[in-house]
Amino acid sequence: MKSEDTRIPVTLLTGFLGAGKTTLLNRILKDASSGPVAVIVNEFGEAGLDHELIEAVDDDADIMLMQSGCLCCSIRGDLSNTVFKLLVRRDKGELAFDRVVIETTGLADPGPIMQTLLVDPFLGTNTRMDGVVTVVDAVNGPATLDAQFEAVSQVALAELIVLSKTDLVPEPTVQSVTDRLRALNPTAEIHRASNSGFGPAKLWGLTAMRKNVTQQEAISWTMPQKNAPAPLNNLSGMMPAAGRAPVTTSEFSRHDTEITSISIVLDEPVDEAVFDKWFDTLITHKGRDILRVKGILFLKGLDVPFAFHGVQHIFDPPIPLTHWSGDDRRTRIVLIGRNLNRSEIQRSLELLRLGQSQSQARQMESQTHD
Image (cartoon, rainbow, N blue to C red; front, side, top):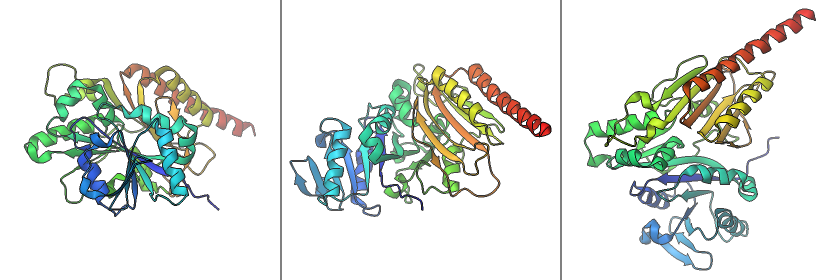
């Protein structure tokens, strides 16, 4: 019998200053369709919460209870301590929530927070990443991307990008901003906050790192979204943002030219030793420059693939995709990194291909001798 994953799902809500995170946060707290949510913010005063939503205040635990059944608390001390206190009170029946949303500061790079959720003993055991949601301002977004690498990192690490203030700029400008975001992160979904079909429910279940993920959800997690630049087939599609002349508001500091998205597709299952050697070498030499890596991995001799995910050199435990069916046994890997050398990455991919060929040759030779 499969054990149920009882870890609490955590969503990171990020976006630069003035992008509209607080507006989206208030929408989450007003909408009860996703069940009770615990929202962790840095300070209540900074969050700008709609106080009409507040039903009661628990001063001792810095918790604000909402009419929707959600609750909001400010970080006191470190993140692990804050989540620990919330879960202890939930287990005692004093609080009720099904998931946690962490609103980062506008200047925050989400990478270190994602790493904390993995390496902290308590958080790693009791929580799981459910996705990164980044809010981008259609009015000021291009200028922010030009000037602040943290904003570029927020976009590059997102599973979902919410484009706000689209009603304040002409449609061609909205489309240009959208194209720039797709170039930075081809696998992220992009939704306009003003669309009638967009709601808080769109924020949940964004990664394949969960036991009940469907096959289509896992594939979508690693594939370019609608209208995104398509990767090349059969090993690697290298998609440097620098080659797309991103829409910008200045003639300097185009930080997204530092970002490259690489999609790797291997048609046959991979020899475990070959993959481990290639991947360990890549992370050892380029770990600081790789913002994120995720994928679906088929290993030789195993019928079930694995979803894997990492931020720089810190990785989630792989998740077996037990719902996989059919003949599709392609390994899919997505790398998003900074200042990645095209020729070095290409050589490493050729080594992976060569390693596969040599492994297959040794297997055929062994079968011939038998």
